[in-house]
Length: 137
Image (cartoon, rainbow, N blue to C red; front, side, top):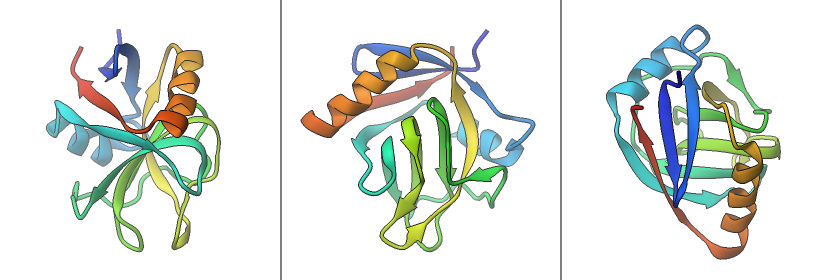
């Protein structure tokens, strides 16, 4: 059974929390559920979409941080040299911003429909922002 449902437009994905590797980030995000926002395509990072969160703070430091999330991996950048953000990789990604290469906490992994995720990611590049919801199953 999945820990979370992610809904992008009319598409739904099952995801699991990476609680062993990023316990504080998972706990903080769980407390923010349901989480509703919009995704836009990344500028510098490759094949990924992101949720810019500005000054929003989750109160976490770095845990299991990576600059190279695999397709379906979701990372949280807790802020600092760049704004707080959530990034969802759908293809080759090197997480970066105008400040340079970044690393974010890998706290969620999408377990299904990665081909659909890639289509949505490319669609976001060409047609703009899409609604996203993170909800308990």
